[in-house]
Length: 233
Image 1 (cartoon, rainbow, N blue to C red):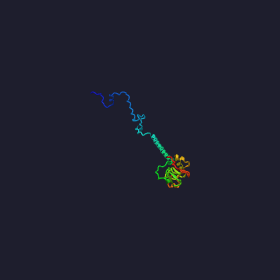
Image 2: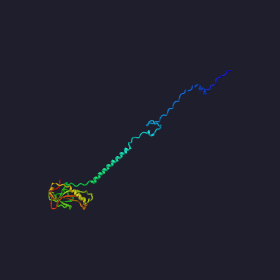
Image 3: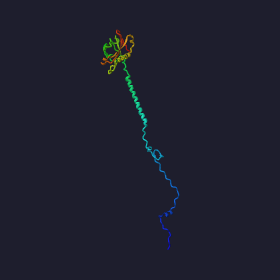
Image 4: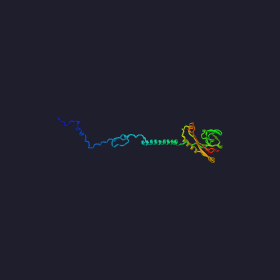
């Protein structure tokens, strides 16, 4: 009898497979790739590895410099205030500094009150009228032609506003002197050496009755007369 010395075959054994697979060469291990850097869409690569949210937000629309805008607003307010102050000062200067002008010293262009001679109320006297036997305290006077004998001629006048209060006697006297200063004589006045200026103004009682006139008459001393129109045209 023969004997088989072949060892039994075991396909799953480690020794069997190892004998058939050659050993792997001695190569160094492959390097491990580093992770990709964090994405920074607007700020580029961040070396710290941290992405700041505020660096990557879209910029807000341009709103202008708030400090400059505030200065413009303040400047506009200051300019407006200065303009307003200038207007107020101008109005006050006009209200406080303006004095009423005396009436024109030339004869009035008002329509004639009738043929001469005539008796005329003092409220109807016109600049240039000539009066015979003139009495400054009377409420009426006899108007005559200036080329006839007379003792007074109305040279200038001023009328206060009706709504005003009584200004006082001293103020009325001062206004009378101002009105008389505005009279301008013609060459015929040089023929008379006794010419005077006389202001007539309202009393308290006549003011209450509506008398607002301050008149300045050219007069002569009692006993003398005038036979000319003495006003410059």
